[in-house]
Amino acid sequence: MNIFSGKIEARDEPLALGTDPIPTKYYYDPDWYELERKAVWMRSWINIGHVCELPENGSFIRRELEFARASLLITRGKDGQIRAMHNACTHRGTQLTDEPCGKKNTFSCPYHMWTFGSDGALISAPDFERFYTSKESVSLKQVAVDVCGGLIFISFEPQESLREFLGDMAGMLDQLPVARATTFHEYVYDIDANWKLTYDNFQENYHLRFIHPNTVGPGVGPDNPFGYPSSFSLNGKHRTQTIWVNPDGQVSPSMLTAFTKGGARLAQDGILDHPMGREYLALFPAFFLLCSPGNHFLHNVYPISAEKSRGVIRLYWIGEDDTAGVRYAREFTMATTRDVHSEDVAVIQAGQRGLSSGALEHIHFMEKEVLCRHLMKVVEEDIEAYKAEIPAA
Image 1: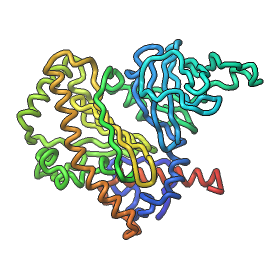
Image 2: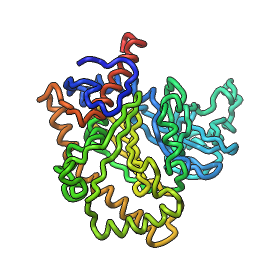
Image 3: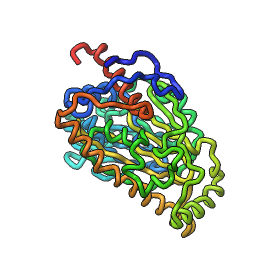
């Protein structure tokens, strides 16, 4: 297929990226996956958390990122600064902690008790004078980290700053309620499917009335039976779409109760009628955020191997569950989110089995799947740029 070259910019032009079929090897070939790992995932800015997880100095979270073969510690140091560093002692590489989160001012290696501060500096090590090196030279290895809209991003080999990478999307994130979030619900799943196949499921609505007839289907309506978005925009490596809403859509009594109770809290927070409430923001490579205040839904998909990926779904909230009604609304929203997602898993994995069988050489995207095509175009472009820099790749 033709590799798109140049900055991708289009709004409501469904054929802006052409109509070529997509090679199926992109979804299972280990050599192509290795190129993606190096050219896309190691060089992009990846969301791995939120500042609400580091509420005070000494707070930390640990993240396992298989695509980088890395375990990371994200800390808030004594100076209040957020840092990211490898969870690997610089003596012999032993991981410092297996705790998922907590509060610590120091991290001590269980093997030989080398002790590091929350800034990564070596504080002490038994018989260190016999190593004939300096403490400064054996600090924990740092990873680039930055924050936008309250969301924490890391990059192993950044090609530009976070805000340069995000472009116009940075300003959008800054304006959203997620920037003020103080807590969240989380749902993590592993799936036997390539990261792009997994992620693409959430970039198109062509499947809604077939896979979600009872959960989402009743809300689409005869005028737009597939629930296609009202508009879309391609913005460099990223993309947005405006979610179509059926004005005559029906909701269940329990959903109405949740919306009513949740809406009272949203009104209290001053975000009930947020101007971006129907927007879907997709950040390269595999992040999307539904901006609806009533379902401030974020989904990251991370690659594990050519045919396996991990999804992290989060619903972010402002404030604690201060009443039973708020608690009900939030729990109901998370339960509904899981119900809808559970309907997708089997069909995504079935698609992976079909592609991995080698029965097909190409797949096809129609014009309403332009966001899926856009993702693949940007992946291709990054890989071509990487191969040009490293001829042996």
